[in-house]
Image (tube, rainbow, N blue to C red; front, side, top):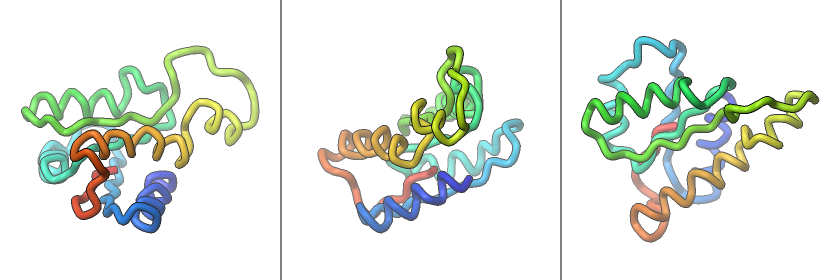
Length: 126
């Protein structure tokens, strides 16, 4: 959650983009009503998880987005499905793309793709 909050703050300050941050305390069951409410008005949904991406929370969100018939892109931030080197957790997060900087690099092209340039008024679910 802290990384999502930081990303939201930086998007607002640097890009003028409003981003909603939703604390998904429980991976299951997915709150489909909340997902639909925010997902339909968002340009992109970003999930953060301190777990492997494949088969994780982001995958469950992708499945629900599909079940709801939504076309909102989903950007998943998490660990790759591979053996991870040993090291300091903060160093590993940077190396494997679990940082605010890496999240912005993955997110901004999606926003630019939607309208040709990043939209600055629509909320983004993070």
